[in-house]
Image (cartoon, rainbow, N blue to C red; front, side, top):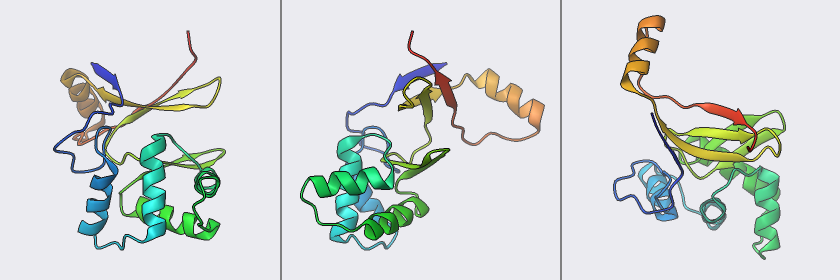
Length: 153
């Protein structure tokens, strides 16, 4: 089984924004989907790619305005929902609310049970395990993500 933390090196062939693709790939994806790239939408995307973290809409609103960006709360929410619905960014539903991240490619998460911090992971399960799961469930696995929880050692 191969596991790696999210990389920050550029990936030349990313079809969906992944660990190494830049914000320009998200812009391109928006254009391909016919989405308007307004100033506010670019600000939201830029922040998500700069932070490379999982943020709430409120966090995004506060960070943008703290940086002198003039954007309204409603505009942040509307852009996040549009980007998430189109598959440009990810949205994680947590008990504390929704968190948004820059990646939209299939990947897994590790949540720290002490702090609640979420780390992106790229996990590749062994083909034998996938075959066992397929035999057990009767489904052909096309993609997967794992949600792991743990505490620092």
